[in-house]
Amino acid sequence: MPDFTTMLMGVAVIMLAWDCIEVGKNDAANLINGVFGARVMSHRTAVWLAGLAVLLGAMFASPVMETARKGIFEPGQLQLVQAMVVYVAVYIVDTALLHAYSAYGMPVSTTASLIFELVGGAIGVSLGLGFVHWDKVASVLNAIVVSVVLTGIAGFLVQRMFRAAIQDEHTDHLRVLLHGPWIAGLMLTWLAWFMILKGMKSVPCIAAFRTQFVERIGMFGFLIVAWGATTLLVHVLATIFQERLTKRLFSLLAILGMMCLAFAFGQNDLANGASPGLSAFWLWKHADVGTAEATKMSIPVWLLAGCGALLVVGMTTRSAQRVTRAAVNTGSQYDHIALYAPNWCKALARRLLRLRPAGPDLAPPPHRTETGKRVHFDPLRAAVIMSVSASVIAFASSNGFPVSTTYVTFAAVVATGMGDRTMSRGDADLKIGRAIWVVFSWFAGGLVALLATGTVAWVLLKAGTIGVAVGLAGNLALRTYVKFRSDRHERQYHPKLPAGVEAETAG
Image (tube, rainbow, N blue to C red):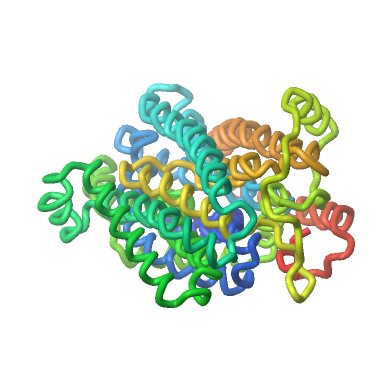
């Protein structure tokens, strides 16, 4: 019979795959909701294209992985069995929590969930507060809050500025030829800065370019030069290809933004599903050198890539489609949408709406594709959502902060909707009420994650193998119950959607 630590390692490795799939299920909406809401490409194509970028980003996940692996609490100060119990308890709670949110189409921060679970688990096994790096917890939570605020402000201002230039004529050749180059130049410049020069600054050739060129002319000088060069390039291409490019310019920018966001997601959110299991395996494998030394050893790239592939698997599931549909509907330019929000959230939303009078519509009139599917965003707004979100997340990842992809992209959807005034007409109380319900659920989910993981970790440590069996049984029972209730909820609010096509009709 294997000893208790070996059994914990085996459970953690098996649940690593489970949790990576759950992370992919929920965060899939954050990667493709812009291009899918704008009907730039089909759901299936968007998922697989974004999945390729996720795999590439996963190979650069080390800084964030280290923050999640040993930045929140110090495994070296715990006994081996205590550290292993923390990681298994995190998985038991995290897989159930993410499954519940995804089943109801609710986005949840996998980053915040992991942080609160690690804190709760460390407290549960030690029955004290001394093993938690509270300064690091505070800095990560502060980074999440700041990133949400910055994304909201940037999304609103950029959308309002670009909309003033393009208005609702994103396919008009003359208007796009006039304003498209400088808008595209801005997007390409900030994506290059945040994704490459900041997000990949540890790559030798990027580091050399920064030293030899960027640092010599300064950041401001480089950004001006890059903006001018990309603006000129796009103008020349638009002059050559004419309407073949101008009609598709913002669609192409939205796809590029999606790819950058998916790359940043692979860097940032891989840690949310992979770090507990990889940490448990690494501690068990190198137990002979001690817990403190084992946490200093690097994790191979091929393991990170394998975890990235599991994220992609989760992105293809039906639960992921539900999350996508709900995120798209929340920021839809359609007046009437299918969403759920509690009555108290809608009542609060109506009070907020009375404080701000509605202005004239800025977004294009709602319309459908040739096959009858709703177009919830225009490509210009999709490009802003994707590029702003990708830039914020890439910048955070380069500094080792596992910020929330969910929070950032949700803020971008809502902020650009406010910029287009789509959140103040029609079912505005339902849209804003849904946003309030999502934010409330984020805070509630963090508290539940902390308390539940602390309790589970204490039970595992005291009850041993029996505790693990009880924890897994409780997890499966909760998943079964949630599936039954969520399917009934789905039939109530989306009765016309046949099984398996939730995202394709999107409200």
